[in-house]
Image 1 (cartoon, rainbow, N blue to C red):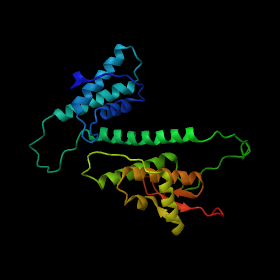
Image 2 (cartoon, rainbow, N blue to C red):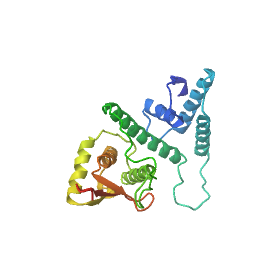
Image 3 (cartoon, rainbow, N blue to C red):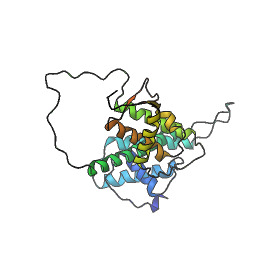
Image 4 (spheres, rainbow, N blue to C red):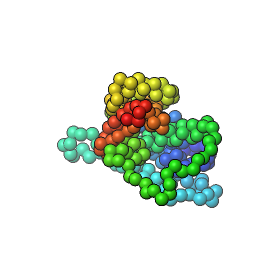
Length: 245
């Protein structure tokens, strides 16, 4: 009930951060959100922030409109006059997908922030490439960081489809060193491997995240290079030998 809601006003990074805080603080299943309850509590937060004369970004009000729309759709009666046997789409699906993706990237961001704090201070060096030399574009087939992130989202969706009966996600940290050893062992036998094939037999979300971070770590160490032939497609991991090939 909203009357039992204790309003605390920490610094939220956006509306998804606020929603995730409400869900976690009440131990709500992210895949089965009581939309009426969450909408009421979300609006209570905005009202309290307005009473304190806090600056509220427009995106918070956009999210409130989305929550009210989903709430209205969930209250509408089902159409019993159609002969379509397919189940109707849950109006919460779009919101759930956004929250799951935000939660994953928030954990990845927190990991990189921790890694950055643990890395010793290094001295900068002068640039190796003269300022007069033009920067050449990447060769065809190599990918950008955004394309790499989109492919990782596809892997998470494939994992979700293999576990349709699971209604909650319990993430346990998987040591990245274990996944690095896993990739090194595979690539010692094969010069090229598929990222999807490595993650297909994984049943834990933490394993997939650990595998993805291990991939980035090996790229950083210049032990592998990653290619992608199409958008949202599989990633091809290729071993870089000592001779640089």
